[in-house]
Image 1 (spheres, helix red, strand yellow):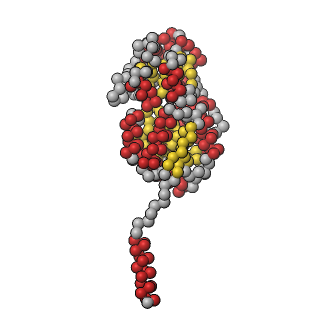
Image 2 (tube, helix red, strand yellow; image 1 turned 90 degrees about the horizontal axis):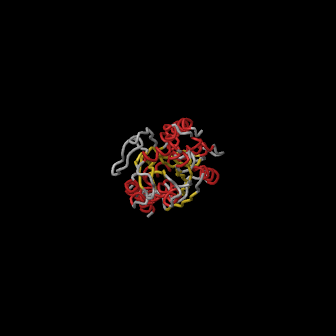
Image 3 (cartoon, one colour; image 1 turned 120 degrees about the horizontal axis):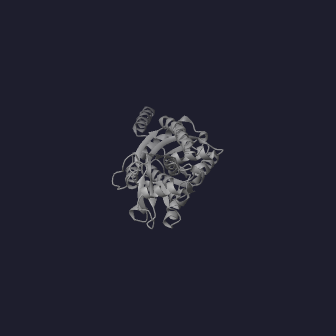
Amino acid sequence: MRRDAFLKTLLLGGLLHALPVRSAEPPVLKLLIPANPGGGWDLTGRALGEALVSSGQAASMSYENRGGAAGAIGLAQFANAYGGDPHALMVMGAVMLGGIITGKPPVGLSKVRPIARLTNEYNVFVLPPQSPFASMREVLVAFRNDPRSIKWGGGSRGSTEHVAVHMLARALGVDARRINYVPFRGGGEAAAALMAGYLSVGGSGLSEFLPHITSKRMRAVALTSPERLPGLDVPTLREVGQDVVIGNWRGVCAPIGLTAEQRLALIERVRLALASPSWNASLAQHRWMSEPLLGEPFEAFVAAAFESMRAVLVKAGLS
């Protein structure tokens, strides 16, 4: 009997070891979005959250919007509240780099670790339906002749659309001090101001304004892309005589204080989410360009992008 019991124990143990090991349950992930609801960062963050859940990389998501100062307010909140949290992410992007360079906030990129680049998109300049201008060429003629008469609106100081306006001013010989630019904390606020007739021209990421363009509540007149985008009958700034090209990439970062294993786990979760049908559907819906870059290569990209943005801002008179 003892021998039989011993054999049964061995057999049972062998069977148990042969069974697949149940993987740990996915965690609840927290995502801080350093912008108000309705803008490009908000759309990107929530689309990523849906992809993380649908791909089984998160049990659920919690979101926190902290807009203002081109993401600097949210960055400070993330650094102070989520340090060392292996289940926390924050949306980041080109706009945040511009905000840090121009605003020089006390909390900078040294307080986060870049995890993944998600998308890239270009900006679009739009007019309200009642605009007296028929094209971007007409806007630029008026801007050159009387800069203060054109009220531009878009993201925070240092955002890619703000930089684009300064690049246009420099190309046209307009004194940067005469630019009439109104910064908003998100694309939703800028859209509302434009449609209410408060602005002459609005600028933002294409995905933020696309629903309003489609519904004809805005009229797209120029893109900051090097060439026209598929499916859109909208000229580039190059086509209207101004060699201004600037993109707006978006990604996510983690807090500092994680172990290498924790950081790699977050990178893998994001990688699997980016391969999901949910994420691919969001790319198509918002016309985002998929440009994934993970881990250390993304860290190197952010460092290089920071220096490149600094050079552009210095040339544009913003730093």
